[in-house]
Length: 340
Ligand code: KG4
Ligand code: ZN
Image (cartoon, rainbow, N blue to C red; front, side):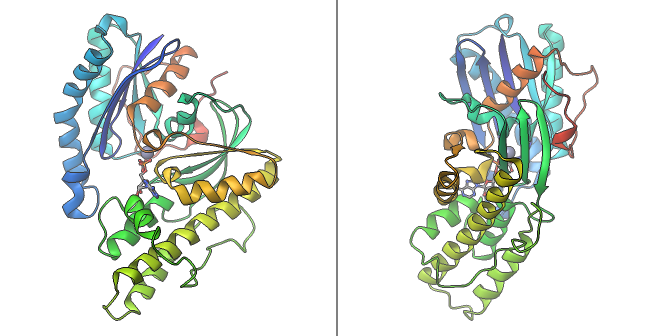
């Protein structure tokens, strides 16, 4: 089976073709970063319009790259949510139209399931059950994954997502968008012990997170330098902020592994590309002789490959889209039908 995947939930137009025998055979990504940069964040209306401009040409290119005709494709997977309403509509309506014209099924994919399954695109795919830490710009969730398609939410952020905290903190310090890579780069030359940032909610039981307080702490620390923050000061703040986020995530992951008696920890979503996070979690799973699973950085952030892959699993389970174009800007992961 060969599936065309379409991702348009936010500021990346991603298209890919995944084949269950040959694997990932073509992939293209157009990032809108330069479009949104001057606003310091994603402008939803601009995002939708740009997806309209880029999506069909990208689909053409991917078909050419794969040396495929539409008749070689067995199904079309598209991100149906969560995400920006208008942006999702572009992908959904394009997928549904092509599905009708080409006479093949379309299947809606949950964006976070796409992220969660991205490490399965790698050479040594993880086994189940496992605990997944999903850390993106819109979500921070701990999920118990009994098997592919069976998800139980263990905890989540009550306010900002981890990626959002990176983005907002970076904006506050005048760094470029998206903030995660900018903070990570700056943190590399910073002293992560200079300021005593809090580790939010770690003293409370449970597996929920809260990251909005860290942003305020950063602002106070930054303003405490009386508008005269040097490059070194900024690097130190970035390093302390990153360490606080990473250690907070690590503490909750340790707790989740213990509660579920699980030794496998999978990380996915844009923030899982963060090398400091990977290093700390490697140590954490090492303590229980466990295993840390993740995808290469390009598959951690938004892409069409993860949508094609997740869609293929759902098509194989006989799931397809209704004829009307449906998207779900809010869509709980644990309400998905199972894949069994
Ligand atoms: O998964 P993703 O591409 O899109 C969403 O589904 O939201 O995640 C984007 C988020 C942004 O907040 C970005 O700042 C963050 O991932 N991010 C990172 C890194 N690379 C991307 N955060 C920390 N360190 C990174 N290296
Ligand atoms: Zn994403």
